[in-house]
Length: 64
Image (cartoon, rainbow, N blue to C red; front, side):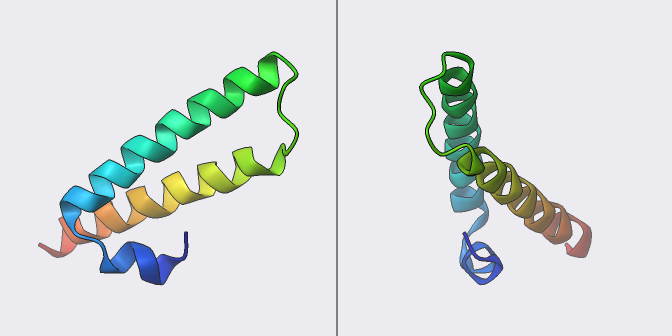
């Protein structure tokens, strides 16, 4: 997810995306533990998306 996409989302949408990303990360970790994960780079991408979303949420909180 690109930073411009994240900035254009509403607060509720950010919360929903964060919840989705955390669920995906949980599933990816589970797949990695059971040796079913093919694309291990996806874990890093999801972690970065989570960080980007949290950063935007915090920036909005501080600017308000």
